[in-house]
Image (cartoon, rainbow, N blue to C red; front, top):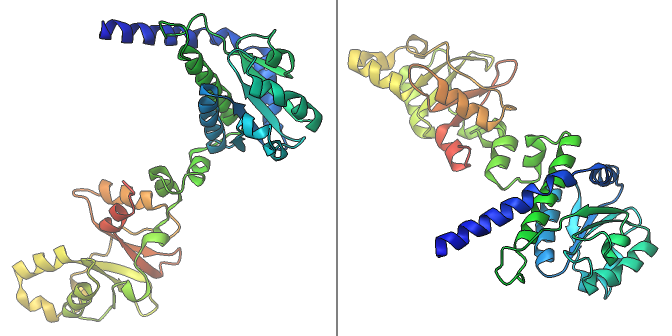
Length: 322
């Protein structure tokens, strides 16, 4: 019985969402266009379960480029309507369209001058009749066997809210970089906002030796800075090569006397490099795609090949750029 009831619930809610498709009509398009040209913010309000869904709709709008916030209708009736301006658009949610907390604030919203988009199940309801735009989120039946707990209706409302948000996102040409800007603390934000310059080791932490220094000097510098590599520069601080701990090990296997020879005898000249303004995620991609085996360190140089830093794989992992 548990399985059957769960499956039936999902079928009912899936049907409720499918039934919304024909309701993406001219009035829906006009409502979205009204939001698109809104000079203020979108104020989402709803009571009870509709309020919970409304909070999510407001959050989705805000994170996808449409300034929005949730306004509790009961608090609105006791002073919080001062948050609403004539340039705003109010999305009022009520399945019945008769929630007293919503109906009570409609006349005040009218006086303020904000436009009203009503999301409810009946156009003939108080909310439906007092809205500038009506979006039908009504359902044939709830998944609740008692027909009491909002289930299919809240699912339909949430889906229609997503439809509005995604339509706006498309019209605004909202990009993943824009999304990351509003999510700087998330993984996407770190990937799309963090640059090599933000992560790299620079100044005293940046391991560098000049042409003419010995392999021993390079080894000491590498050990002191702890990055497993050292950049080699000419007299003008231009990048000319790199010495890694792997190069040192391989040289030791061949001839221990190399340690007193000039560093240019063992350095790798055609090394991978990256510029400081590149995304940290790009540095990770360069490291991973290097053949025949990935590398763990990249010298950072500017457009004139001046050495400005060094970035290590562990720096990227520490920042969550994965």
